[in-house]
Length: 186
Image 1 (cartoon, rainbow, N blue to C red):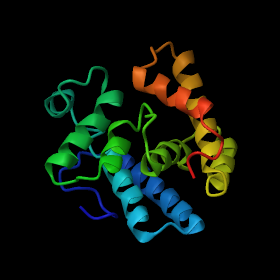
Image 2 (tube, helix red, strand yellow; image 1 turned 180 degrees about the vertical axis):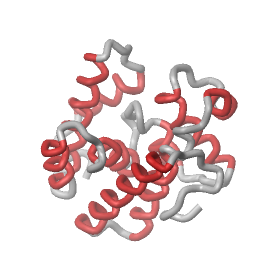
Image 3 (cartoon, rainbow, N blue to C red; image 1 turned 120 degrees about the horizontal axis):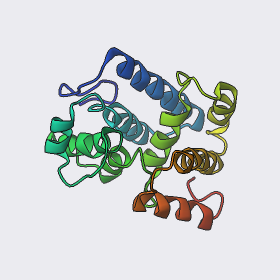
């Protein structure tokens, strides 16, 4: 798999592909603004192209690829895509963790996971709070840790208001954000 395409095994609708392309565009703009080294940029973009590669796969396929992951497709597609990517030769733990936990958050993430988590939420095609999300996306290259915390707070607030239980990795992720110095993700 290259850094700029979906894997051949992806199962995505045209709408999902458009979402992934917008996430890739945002991540590319951040990498340019932050003058990220080519190898790191490639890691970020591999995570982007993999993160929703199985978002439109059926429940049976997701269960086959991620049998120990409970929950709805919204939570299973990341672990399933990470498992498939690993089976196809992806060896970068940071990329695999970014894909596996992009819906939940992970305290142990490196920048690939943190970037994907923010870009997935901030991409311009989402209909809610366009101005607020655009401002966070604009700020990301100068304040990745601050924006990460704000994105996590918004996502967790939505999760709590929805009445969903907070998965253990999400709780640890949030706790890591509120106990680390503000610039810890730089």
